Length: 323
Image 1 (tube, helix red, strand yellow):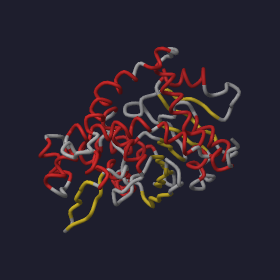
Image 2: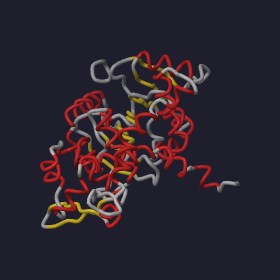
Image 3: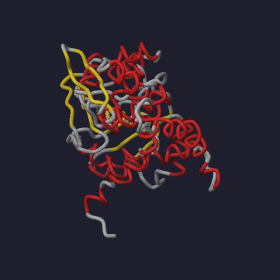
Image 4: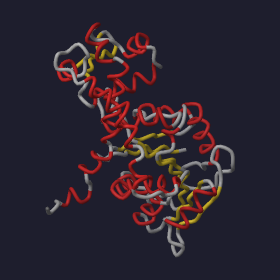
């Protein structure tokens, strides 16, 4: 089968497959927590009311309901300034326990048994060091999104860039490719940089350098532009502000900070990929995916001005602030 140029540049089908388990587990969790049954019995409700009735965290339930909207398992509407969630016809017929056509018990079995069994599937094939696997994951997505995020704004005025939490150097390599006059320093923990040197960045690449450190504690080197790619979404609001304030104090007037993140729509309707990623952040980190307005507020609270947002049409978008 011959692929089109668009399919070769942006393999949407493979990305959908990759997110498949996120979709499944989101649906499973909503079923097992009783979301669809509650909305069937009580009608449209705001997320805090659903959380209260089901005994869950407000934040976690809000993210779960939002993701279900993206998956078209729930629908959302505004009523008197309140966001209300209700079942779609599909979830009402197949995901509520009382429905004669319910698939609830199949969902529960997949969630409680099959899902956990599949966690060990790769053990039958091979075993790799966990850190290298994670870094390969982080690196691979930039193969299809990296160029888009570094050229979304014209960054040619920034001649020295520091990529905070730069991991494998994928964004650094995209930057020096797009901007021949620029150099990039990858700032990360010592063990991460060792893996980057050994597996991802050629020792012959002179325009990329390395700086070991913890960006929450150690000095941040001078630069014209600081890039934080998939970094801010890892942390709570307080930690985000702490990090951005540290960057701002290091910045010289005219310097910039570029955030690369999966942006949620302001009306909570999607994109479903970002909604699913936000659920993933709930179980893996203390952070979350955010709307553009939330990132703008964080940057402005840390002292950055002239904040601009640029959508790329792919998974990750960019927010640029200046000092």
